[in-house]
Amino acid sequence: MLVSGGRRLLTVLQAQRWPFQQCRDMRLVQFQAPHLMGPHLGLESQAGGGVINLNAFDPTLPKTMIEFLEQGEATLSVARRALAAQLPVLPRSEVTFLAPVTRPDKVVCVGMNYVDHCKEQNVPVPKEPIIFSKFASSIVGPYDEVVLPPESQEVDWEVELAVVIGKKGKHIKATDAMAHVAGFTVAHDVSARDWQMKRNGKQWLLGKTFDTFCPLGPALVTKDGVADPHNLKICCRVNGEVVQSSNTNQMVFKTEELIAWVSQSHLALLPQVRHSLPRGRHPDGDSPRCWCI
Image (cartoon, rainbow, N blue to C red; front, side, top):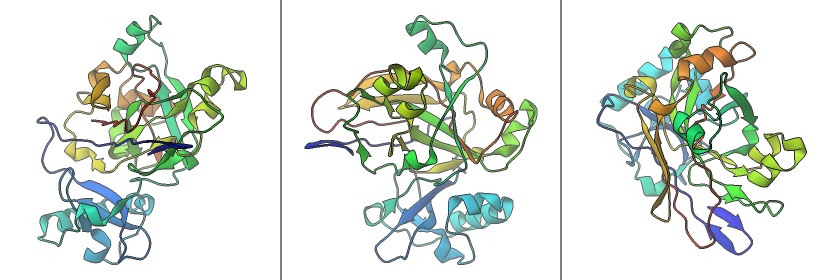
């Protein structure tokens, strides 16, 4: 939800499987349910399906995604066994999805990373990655309310592909980069364009990092379930109208190059690989729906 005074605007983020993706992917989620105490780890039974409670399958598993990923193959192998087993599935209507990763060390973003978008904006294609960040406090769940701050009159949407880093490193070679990737998820890069472009010395940080300005999820799809992260359809619909449409094959800098570049200075648990798509403010009216694919 986008909430500002009496206005309520609904945004929904969803990733869908495409024909080139393998079927063995695991869709890891963090969720809550009325009958459970605190957050739990789970698996979506399928895209848009119910949830398998991993902590019920193995009570020794961590209950947060960061701890789960830090244990590497030991915990991933348990999740694979759970996916293969015939386990009870919690109906989707009975769970609340949290962001698949919460409280990461950093959220590292890349701007102007689409060739087609650069051409549309009549700007040169960057010769090196344009890096910015969001505060981790801006992360919310995929169906949580996004609060429209009264300080901004130019709140904007952008659908993104997020790359989740599961193995820390530094000075990583591009050829080794995918070994550090846990998987991929959907992100919504909400921006206050007036704060980004006109205030704060035109530095992007404050305009990008208002509370609730980074919905994530619902699922972290493990990398073995994405045959080619650089051939994914990515689009945004508002009130049924496509307002952004591209493909990750338009990326200026590919995932491996970006991980190598960012790791020269640091590498956190959640770099959000940001693909700049056409910009546009939300229209006046009720219930814009933003489907991120």
